[in-house]
Length: 131
Image (cartoon, rainbow, N blue to C red; front, side, top):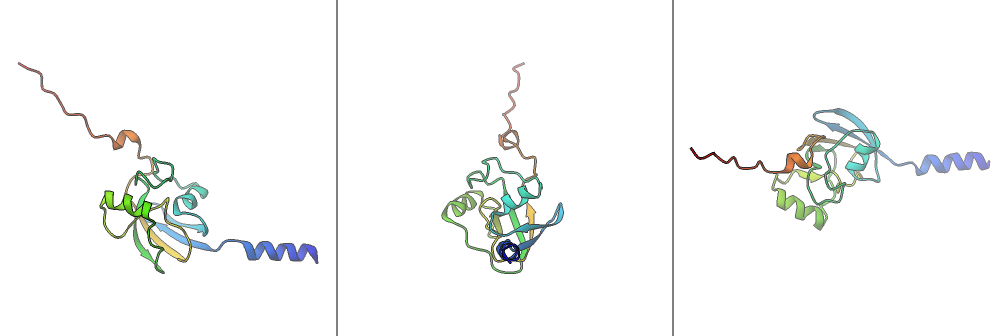
């Protein structure tokens, strides 16, 4: 009876799952109770995140193309970064977007998974040599 009760408790405590379709990758299933970025990391799906998921850089930004239920509102930290990026109202930070209520989500990455600090630097101006 103890073993059956233990198995039942494990089964009831398991997280719900959400189906995520990434435009350039395809379908994957993630556990709820974590951020979108953490979920993608858990299934070894690379995703840009120069600040390591602290909500500051915006490189983990995704365009939410579809969700089967309303997503939680952005936190003040996320909203400040989104305001600075100005990509539009359908953009969220993967590191700050909690996977909670939706059962299906379709996203599009705004930056490639291998985006680096070198990509973020503006190009140096070209200096013309004097003749």
